[in-house]
Each structure stands twice: as structure tokens, then as C-alpha cells.
Amino acid sequence: MTQATIRLTTAQAIVQWLVNQFTEIEGQRVPLFPGVFGIFGHGNVSCLSEALEAVQDRLPTWRGQNEQSMALAATGFAKAQRRRQIMIAASSIGPGALNMVTAAGTAHANRLPLFLLAGDTFASRLPDPVLQQVEHFNNPSITVNDAFRSVTRYWDRIMHPAQILPSLPQATATMLDPADSGPAFISLPQDIQEIAFDYPIAFFEEKIWSIPRPRPDRHKLAQAVELLKTAKKPLLIAGGGVRYSLAEDAVAAFAIKHGIPIVETIAGKGSLTHHHEAHAGPIGIIGSTSANALAGEADVIVAIGTRLQDFTTGSWTVFSQTARFISINTARFDAVKHRAVAVVGDALETVTEFDALLGNWKADSQHMQHAQHLFGEWDKLLTQLQTPTNAPIPTYAQVVHAVNDVASENDTIITAAGGLPGEVCKGWRVKAPNTFDLEFGFSCMGYEIAAGWGHAMASKGPGGTGGTPIVMIGDGTYMMMNSDIYSSVLTGHKMIIVVCDNGGFAVINRLQQAKGVPGFNNLLVDCRVQQPTNPLHVDFVKHAESMGALARKCDSLTELTSALEWAKTTDRTTVLTITTDAHAWAPGDADWDVGVPEVSSRASVQAARKQQEEIRAKQRVGV
Image (cartoon, rainbow, N blue to C red):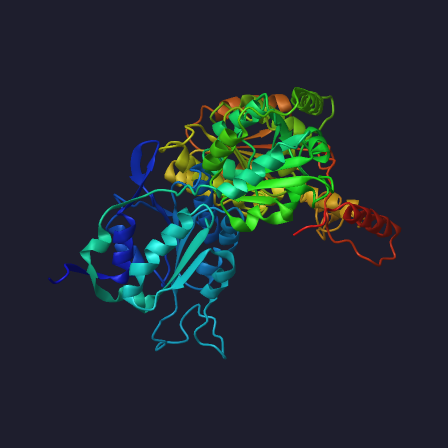
């Protein structure tokens, strides 16, 4: 019997397949690919846009302003949906495609699904060299799209229309696999997009995808149980995998039952509310004194869903040399780090089985009481740091508190690079789970506003928080990427943006000077500018208003609070700006290993080098 077929171009077939992929969120059947961020050029406008236009009622296309920022918006959407839905970012060839590499790196580092479709040069090579083509004289098969190989989990170039039959399902399975989750990239040569092919109709049948939940190996889990039962001062680290597995309640119940304090990584913050009885604060370089003290005392650490990045481990200085690790992770690569008892499996499934095998075992109750005392002292310190003073310029800590105080339970805070990550990670008191997005896996400047657009899209959808995204951003990062203020106004996706203007790249200036280098090229007053004593500051209010946003400048914390309450009532993206102190920071007591010159004529650099050697002497030996 002849197989039924339908004749479509490659681009049309890709789009038809995408609109027939579904998933379920909280019992509701929803599109797996709910939309496309797109900027069209000669590499995709005549074929891919033709296909997308025909299905815009089922697969809406949103016009981006910059390929990097639209792909970052898709990344923020994926984080908001806890990897359960995937947005697509589509670009033309050459510079349009390369603009998405940074976003791909951000998604890759954070283990977030992102589907990238980029135009490419002609497979036939007959018109070569075409507009925006970079030629490689010794290898004509290479194009700029090969740059994505290093920042994607799945990479393919379609050289025949039939190749999408295996490629699209494999790309999707990779993005949904919790062990391999990350960006998938498909390169689409211009002439391949246009070619018609007789595709099997069965290929376009509706499919409902689900995220697999691999169960742990029984032998490894038994080892973990045996090790944990020896612990006198156990500690549980909740990473992003806890949130993506929807395991927050199970992990919290596990900790309470077995008397184990919970500390959170940057990606894991928001697994618990701030005042949960097992919560002991964020751990690491931008963490709390309470969490870091507990880490130093811990004899057995249960790390769940974390890749143990240097900002979590203090470059492997916050733990004792004798501490033992139990690592629960869907990714083998992350689970085996530092000689851990590697339990490879889904966080929810593994914690459930772990709990059953532990039975009634519980750590000494004094250990949890000790953790609660340390966290209480940390919370008091936060209150002191956040209390307004008579100083003419407020600190980051005070601004963070003002925003936190006005934010509703369902509003999501979003930030990324610069000085705000440390201040927000330490000082933001989470009111409800899954309302905290600090992108620090890649520390990508420019993520914030773009991600706010993605969060705003996800907020009102299935599985969304229903609140308003609140983006906190420094003046330096604002200048780097702000065009999605216009995107959000254009598309009706509201966010609130708080711009902390401290006159440049203040936190990297702090690091620069801490390592013995005089302030140089970071703060505006230290840059090569026309008026070094009074450099021009951007009028962020006028700039935001020019893109259709509402905006207000605040000259005090009282004005900021009033403006935040007003911003909650507006009908579009609203930008608030306030001058903040470039030199006052919430304390952090974890070490960080960075490169410091081994030889320098500066005494300050020599001292910093000595200090760095002392830090390295404390590092745990491991891989």
C-alpha cells in the first residue's frame, strides 16, 4: 500500500510539524512551541516567513528588535515555564545568525531549551559568495552557523528536505531531556528551504510530548542512604534542577522530616520561600553568612540539581576537605563531580525514593536549630543593611528592599550581570516559589529586559505565576541592550524596570580595585571621556518614553516606593530610575578564584596575588 504524502517545501514542512507538537501543563493540553521570535532577512524572508504567515493563528510570530535579545527572551520564557514549553528564535544568515550565539551560550550554560532556526548560504554554492557569507578558503562547507556547535546541545544543517524527518524529533527530544536540555540549532540553506518534497502525512500527526523522569540506580541510592546516615551535620543544596523537576515541595518535606537545613544556589533560589523553616539562605560567593557557615561545618552534603558552579562553591573553598557529597542530578556529567556518590535521576523521583529508604532517620535536632539561629542572624543583618539612612544616595540593598516590599507574591524578580546579582541573591526575600530569575550561569549582560519580555509572555499562560515581571538592572547593562522595552510595549507584554544608575560598571570596578588595579575604564569617571569630572549621564526616563514606555525618575527611596505603587497600576511597561551608591555592597564572605598577575610593580597587585594564593591553598582537590 502506498504511503499517503503531502507536497510541501522544507520550510512549510518544518512549520507544519511544529504546530502539531503539544505538551501538558497542569492537566491542560498546550502547544509545545507556543511562538516564534523572528527577524527576517534575505535568508529566511521568502520561504520561512511564507510558512509562518500561514499559521500565525496557531503559531504566533513576534517581531524582535535584535536577534540576541529575542533569543534571550525565549530563554527567559523557558525558565519561567520551568522548561515545559519552548520558544523558537528565527534569523536570517550571517550577522543575524551570529547575533544569537550569545543567547545560545546563555541557554546552554543554564540548561534551558531554546530552538534556533537560522538561514544559511546556498547548499548548491552556485551563487557564491552571497550577501553576508563569510568564505573559508580551505573548507567551503563551513559557514558562520558552525559557530553554534560549541553552544548547543543539538546541531544540524539540513542539506536535503527529507532530513527534517529524523532531525526535528531528535532536536525536540534533546531539548526536553532533563539531562541534555539546552539549545537546539538547525541551519537552513536558502535553496533547501524552497525545495518541495513529498512528506509522509503521518509525520504531521499531532503528538503530545512529556518530560522524562529517570529513576535512580538502586545500588547508588543505597550508597547514598548509607553515607547520609553517618552525617552529624548534613546540608542540602537545592539547585535549579529542583525547580525544573517541580520537586520543591518534596525536597522541602524531605528536609523537614530528616532535619537537614536547605541552602540554595543562584538557580535554585525560589525553591523555598524566604521564611521556610528549613531555609538557611543562598550559598556561595553571592550567598549568605548563614549558608556559608553551614557549608564549612557540613560533613555530608546532598546536592540536588546543581552543577556546582564556582559561585556556589566559592571556587571550592566553602566546604571542608573531608566533606562528602551525594549528588542527585539527571546529568551524569554533573553528578560525578568531586568524588560524589553520584545518583543519576530525576530530582522528584529520586528524593521520593531516598526518603522511603531513609525511613525515620533524622539528624540531631540541634543541627536544624543551629541553622535556624544562623539564618535568623543573617536576616537581622539584611534588615540593618536595608533600613534607609540619611545618606543622600541609597545603596543597592536599600533599593532591593524597596522593590521587594512592594512586589506582590506572584511578581517575578529578574536580573543578571553586574552588581545586582549579589544584592538580589542575598537580599531578596522570596514570597512564592518560582518567582526568582537570576541569570548567573552565563552572567549575560543584556539578558534582563529581554527575559522580562519572555516572562511577561509566560506569566499569564498555563503554568504562569500571573504576576508582573520586575526587572532590576544597572545603567551599564541597560545601555548594552534595551530595545525590548519597545518590544514589550509593541506587543502588550508589561514589565516594570528599575534602573539603578551608579555611573558605570560598578561591581567590576570593585573587583578590579580589590585585585590591586586602580579604577580604570569601568566607572564613567575613570573612562576616557570629554568631561572626566562631570561625565554625561543618560536620561533614562526620556529614553524609555521614546520607546513608548511610561517612566519616572526617583530622587529618594520614598519616591521609589511611591513610583513602584504607581507602576503596578499602569497599562504598559514602566521604567523607574534611581541613582545608587557605586561603592556600598552587602557583605559576602566566600572566596573566589580569579586570575591575578604573578608579577607586577604595584604593591597593591602583589598583595592581591598573595591573597589569591591563600585562597587557592584552601580549595578542595577534585574534578
